[in-house]
Length: 247
Image (tube, rainbow, N blue to C red):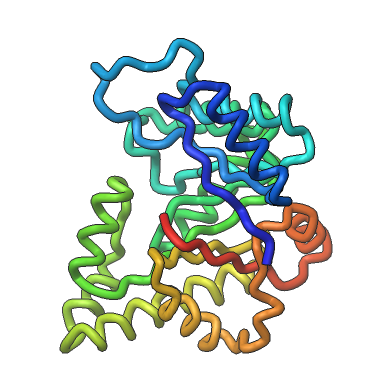
């Protein structure tokens, strides 16, 4: 499987990031998901030569390690730190213009939000593959944790009704897997570029989603190979599916 390293940059010195990227390159890891990371305390002292935004990191990688494939984050339901949705799209375009090869979205639970996001990207002149981020609900406590991790997450009433109707943790997990599997099925049917399954270090739900979809041949479960994603986008074949070990 192709490996993609999640690399956050806020508060990091450029020499530190260069050293990390050089080590990845030596190991043959040439896919980077370039993220700003949590901003932290505004009173914290930042290094003189640090990265303030993900777009800065993308541009640095593209200049210093031009063979690296770069993914960036997208937010179908809105970025927690940006109230202005038009400005938010400007920030995303800045990352793409700096050299990003593809976008991986934050989790969402209504595919209409994803399709609307894709259309807004098209209107903004963003034309790289967009990978849909899916995270199955597995418990009520997990839903609350999701809401904390992605503060603009919207849980559709249909999903909430099904979760509250479920009698016990095992049945809540079944509801979440069914809901996520239906999301993935619809996304594949609409021939999107790819699906990113967030696992939070627990692959059981993700594997059950794949089995529900009939994907027992795990040669189809591939990492973010950008050229493969682009080929699938052009040929309109089955979308790539990626597994992430954490959020």
